[in-house]
Length: 314
Image 1: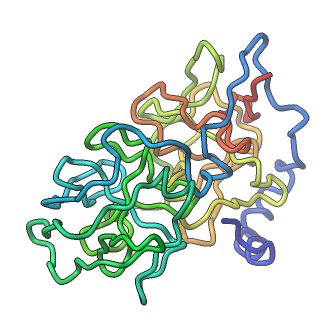
Image 2: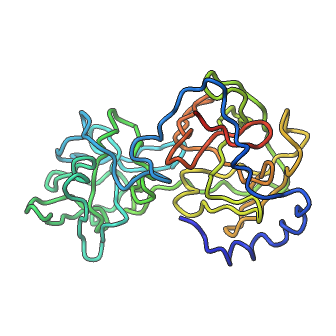
Image 3: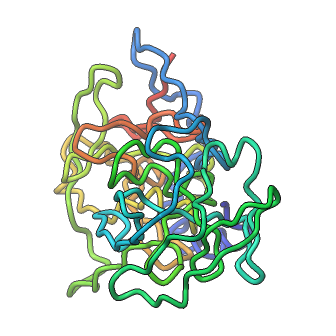
């Protein structure tokens, strides 16, 4: 989901000029590897942001009607549609809505079971006219919402889980209007753009010392970003899954290296904290303080040491 280099250079020109003396080249060779750390495989089906589909179908995600749809509120992604059992319903970017068509068959359909048409009723407050159906290649009828075919995810094993959100940069929970579920941005507070929040250092048995935000959530770097010029190559659906760390005043960055501690003006208008000139992020797959579910995802996402280096496992 990268952005074109020309656009990137223009967008970060001011920041680059201000940090030219501090931001050097790629430090991949100096990335931290905790002594004796066990190898941590990338998350299954992860790719850079997750593969197009995972593998296997979990209990509760088999092909059955949706029944009475409901609207659930998720802390990370806002309002989303669920079936009568509370399982999250998803849409696939490689499908089409006009005309409705599913492009998820074979192994894809094993990981993302199609929701049959027939017994679904609209959620309270939802436009019932959004519900429809499409005939799949095997002749079965699949539920659609606003024209988009509806699926469950095999790795959601209980009601309320959203493990399919953002997989492959192509799978997203349904919002009640049939669009992709996405939490509305909070209104910018007075003085927006100024440094806020905090960064500290935590210790993990596998990672050792690593940076966390003010809520204790692990901070990550993306190997496809660059420090010179300082640029983020995580945009669009990627940044929805890997939110940027907003600017943090140095006074609130305890134990963090000050060299190359700067702010990136992103092409999307957001301001992002950079450590040792590398943009940093959190991960929506981390649900609580101390989680490290983003470590090693796609072989491109890694936690960050206090001196700004990647923490890779041997």
